[in-house]
Each structure stands twice: as structure tokens, then as C-alpha cells.
Length: 81
Image 1 (cartoon, rainbow, N blue to C red):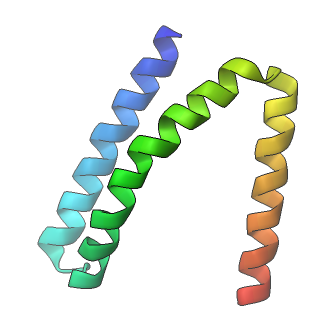
Image 2: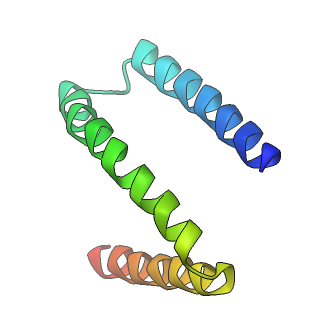
């Protein structure tokens, strides 16, 4: 579990640095900031839900669900392109 926390902290720091550098370089428009303003509060709901699911579902079953969702999202991206 300690590794999990270390990885989360690492990716949070890296993500913040990437976003800050992209904003400084002018890659982002105001629409992105508006979307973030909507998405970030939703994460406060979804993350505890995901943690609860991870605690109540068998790990092997959870991996199957995650892979299934990745396949579905991949198909949606393929159809959209």
C-alpha cells in the first residue's frame, strides 16, 4: 500500500508540472480551464467510489472490469476517428 501512495504522489506532482508548463507555453485555452473547473469537483465523488469498489470487489474481477472499460473506450475512440 505504501508503493501505491508513492506512485500517486509522483504522478500528481508530474501532472501538475506538465499542466503548469503547458499553460505557461500557451497550449491551453479558457475552455480547458472551464472543463477542469467542472471535472475536479466530480473527482472528489468518483475517487472515494472507486476506492470503495476496490475494497468490495475481488482484485481479479476488478482488473477484468478495468480492461473491459479500456476496450470500450478504445472502440469509442476508434469509431470517433
